Length: 370
Image (tube, rainbow, N blue to C red; front, side, top):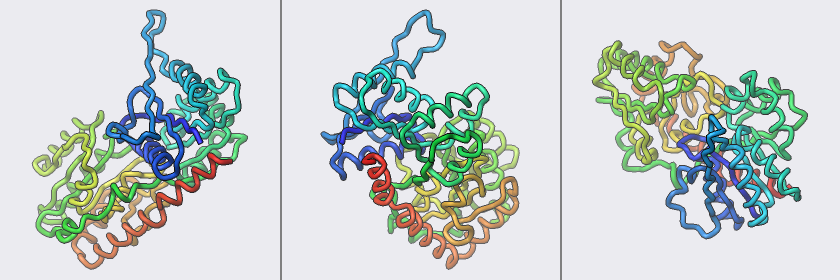
């Protein structure tokens, strides 16, 4: 089967999942996969498989346009690729702009072509619900041949808000176990009693609650009698505000801002706990990646996170804004090595069994075949 995949190239859950789907469909399932975008997906840069192709979208600059029309350029070049490589399925990750561009490309080529759209969260909960985007988002959903959502929570919110005349199927995100797994030499050090390592991984935007991550860490460090460090991985608009909050709370000397990193598996294995205080979260891929490395996650009980995390069993949940409780729950498990190890093992089992890569690939391949 010839498959085209449209996704964002930046570091983020949707791009990572899109890449892993395409890689596995090509290398493990024998399909021809074509990625199309401004730049290669985050993990595609060193790809050498003959069954994986990348086509760059070139956006021409014309004085008549105040903003360069990427969605139109994508639709035009996608239509050429559909014809040249006999594409049978286009899999769009995000409605805007990818599904809309795919719908336009299908209209251009006027040939049998199936469109699959995966909703990842922001396209529905933030962008899609803006008054100026509601109708085009609903149109993108309804004109797709098959629509999937990465959690039951996102599926329900989409159906409640947009009321589409289209059935939506929940297909969860997943991790590549050959990338995210427990490194035995690191596990011997956990949990650290002298200096527990907390970690926050996100794009440092308000929706991810990065300021709350600083506050939770400060409270936990106080309960741990001045022990602990926080590693912040990622970049974003709230980085300066996080630094200021750390200084206000007197923990700035114990917070390390590490920027965007490519060695997440090593970092997750080195951490004792990941803090994920999201305000909204369709799924929580970073949480799943941490759990696959045996590192418990302290997460807000929002969106799809409770579908991934069972409180006190494979990680920890807290009610949004109850930061005191969050810190107390973190400290309780970090100071209980037996309980910590039980949660750590359950986290690995959840990530590798319940969110099995093979199971998810089977589901997507069945969608393509239909």
